[in-house]
Length: 491
Ligand SMILES: Nc1ncnc2c1ncn2[C@@H]1O[C@H](COP(=O)(O)OP(=O)(O)OP(=O)(O)O)[C@@H](O)[C@H]1O
Ligand SMILES: [Mg+2]
Image (cartoon, rainbow, N blue to C red; front, side, top):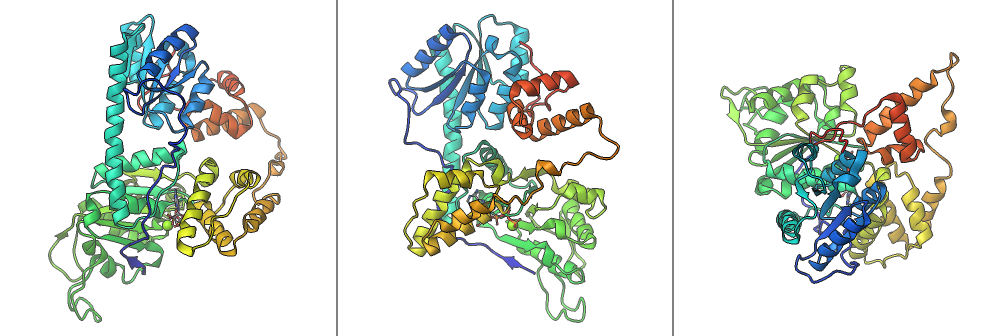
């Protein structure tokens, strides 16, 4: 059994945000606010933009939906203003994209109606104003959004201090996917008890997230018990997890507390939960259902105050379907799922991670930071990172130890020998296929994977957004429903 309480070298968690380059602003009345305005009418866009800029806000005007969606990728926005008439079919897409990165949306409408207001609020907009809005009113709404964001940032930095104090490594990532994970972690830390299930490929940071949840919240004062389920032996399981009384069995010379009891007041991290045997699963289920257990040989039910976090890189749903994982346990664990995105799906984080680990190893190994030429960085971004962040970390470490970027180049070169099956390996079955059915199915899958983001779904299929839209119309497909009870908005 692998059991340990964790302490790691300290470093600051960084979102990787670049705070050095700022476009010109007006008088700095609003502090460091950055607002996207998506409005197709140039006059309205210019008027609102200059009102915001005069108040000291950084303004990102966008006349096209794609440009507006692109602006989210920067991770630097604080609020979004959406011109109601400009939105067309893309309104729910834009609001959905904003809500996924926790950005509030103010809708400005030149011909406001109650119905329109209700539709936008239902779709997830936080505010709805008639245009032309009086400047103090518009600025007041933005100021309140900024205050809410500042409060959240303050909370994050307090937690950051906690993490640093407890030596938890920095979590790097400014991609929208990682920002979503961080937002979720914030919510989870607020809720002290809910069970969390962390899913994702090996090396994506599941372990790190579990530590962050524990060490950044009030449970940080309690123990963090890390149990690697692969190593739990069936026979001794009950005693190892729940402890035993003296004399409960031949070898039980003394009373022993189990892992669950040792985690009281803190967190029990069940790593590699997908490797747990069915026998162990049923015992764990009883504990999760009743939050009570008995030591082996004990008479009394004991209760503990423990948050359970489980993690696995296996596909639990498939395991449930194959009868290898209990469905009832899966539902018990899957209260708050966190899906860690693979590194290849957030290539923008690669340069941040490379620089971060170079600094880490510069401090640890006292080796000079290597110069990574742009061509190499571009290649590293394009690499598919099957071992995710762990692979990147190890590579940078090796490059630093050997003081040469040749190590990184050699990995990049290997990429020209593809490991994954290429498109050419899609073989036509002897009986042929119904092409329309296949196309519709692939499109649905891509939309699902991209959570309804049409441009991103297109990237997965080598199509542009218009081609995706055309096919959605052709097959009568709707985007998956937005997270905040959105509706397919036609305004
Ligand atoms: N976003 C990140 N920022 C900085 N370091 C990271 C990040 N993600 C992962 N790491 C580092 O990469 C290494 C692997 O991460 P971790 O052990 O958390 O992965 P895992 O998902 O638990 O993998 P496995 O499934 O193999 O257990 C660790 O050194 C971790 O600190
Ligand atoms: Mg792990």
